[in-house]
Image: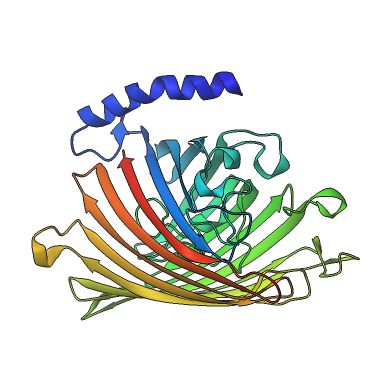
Length: 377
């Protein structure tokens, strides 16, 4: 693994040189069937924390590199693979942050190794998709392989990308849900006009617990969506329901239970400058869970008024009600300013406030200041 890591660092300057020479292209097409793309992102975050004995106010950085390859032998067929490499774990390194939620939801160094207990490193997704064109606005897509459920479920135009939008985990996806990533599964996508229905099933290698409680599990999800086009602009309204097999420990750790969840995700343009989003989520508490429900929302502001329409300001807030573990509730506030240097490079200044109110003992709280740089190719 050390050899692979050193090789990745050695080729990084070459990758950056390719990006610089790529001009305004967001991907490199080798021919009309084969293309490569991806993202390189680095972030530094400083946490100033209180009421958290044993944890220090400190700054840490990390980098993520995710190249991807797409091969489309026909207009209806695609083979796709995405890889992940990381350098450092930032504040997400073990023992560095007192907070339950991640301050940057990117897949970093430890996340790209032994993925889901499968003894697989660096390969995040690899799948094949065939799309049936039933009519001009009626399609059915079937995908199978190593997939990421968040690519299909709970999307949001303004709060869904840890590289270009909010950094905090809860403002990227619904933290009370258990949308799985990077394991064997299949997806079906049916679209007819403004309506869509998606289904995802995955077989996961681990439930994330340790010791005797660590078990593989299956998860199943369905999403119903509607895309509205009003005088205000584009809007998307989605409802997701999901269920796992009985492979999660109950609060006492004596037997296994299923997990069930529901997510509502809405985004709506409000003219050419503003956008608004909401995300709500709930889950049952038969299994041991940190959070029972989440209520979040925010605003998106384009830089059009100051002559930079590709710049973005994001403002988001989330309130999470605790489940049957140690946390009573959590607050997360985040705002960011993303400055697009060109079609490839962008720099983001980010500020977060987090508070975990515990049922007993200390309740960590504090500010996290971040700077993120990304290159999309």
